[in-house]
Amino acid sequence: MRKTWLLGFGFFSISITWALYNAFVPFFLDSYLTSTALIGFMMTIDNYFALFLQPWIGSRSDRTESRFGKRMPYLLIGMPLAALFVILVPFHTSFLTLVLFMVLMNLSMSIYRSPTIALMPDITPEAKRTKANGIINFMGGVGGILAYGVGSALYGAHKSFPFIAAAAITLLAMWILYRTIREKRDGVVAPAPASERIRWRGELDRTTVLLLLAIFFWFVSYQGVEALFTLYGKHHLGLSEDAAAFSLTFYSLFFVLFAIPSGWLGNRFGKKRIILIGVCGLFAVFALVPLIKGLLLLRVLLAFGGIFWACININSYPFVVSTGAERSIGTRTGLYYLASSLAAISSPPLLGLVIDKFGYASLFVCASGGMLVALLFLLLVKHKGQSADSRPSAASVGN
Image (cartoon, rainbow, N blue to C red; front, side, top):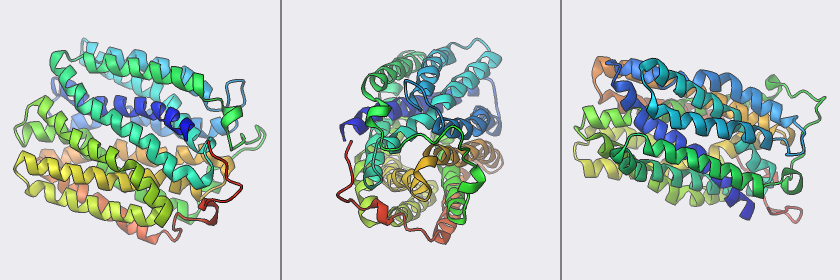
């Protein structure tokens, strides 16, 4: 699994950048805006680009043929641009320049996000994909810990330092992937013929639609909490900005600790079963948070939340891929991110509007409701996430 660990650096750079963005950009917006709903909306405006670009780029990368491979060209274009614009975000001079740099940064990340994630099933046999997803999400979780832990200390020293560090990590990750991943050598999935158009409608069978709806609603809960938690900590709990961001370290730490075991459990007992445990557990965590006043108990709940989120997040993407054909991995990756992007667009402004009307305690009431709806759709999915192809066989080849 050496290649999987190296590929994890790509996910590491994406995760650390998004975590820093969600933790600290709301503070920049808070200097210009007084409405939480408006702040929530501004935190999602970039996702409108992701909504259209990521499915299209994922599908296009399925049919791309170049000397660099089918996914790598998108990384070589998007990652340097993202590094440039993430540095510029804290150096905004007005509300307009802040929004401009936010949009350009996320537009750049949309170019390479789907192709980076699609590399995992490209170079990994079906029987090992859930474990591999656990590894790359372990790397992503480490990025979250650094973002909330070390990033909080850097932010306290100067507001630009975390963003400069994220840009450097993005460029380092690009160099590692370019030097170590050779798609034509390492790939177990061939590109779809350029003449063969993969239609999205053909991928949207009943199982996939129900699964995407479940993904949408659990991301509504997750994205809303991630984008607004630091404001919740500051305005509802009275925490300092860096202490509010540091509290999320506990969520990320336990996500990391349980990422690889969650992949093993999904492979052993079925992806759907482990996701169900995660959804029920995270529903309970979100429902309990408004009742908690002490910081220690809050961080303990966040730790359990990280464990349950690992059960969901580690197994959901391989679940989506396993219900379709190998030739459509990029397309299904795009559909997965379409669902999560729709959630990212709708969740923070809607939850922000609820907060404006009912107060910050309502954030976790809505988040628990979203997990409950996700549970209902997931129960309608008949596929167990453990097909015959997912069991190891003599024909399986490692990476």
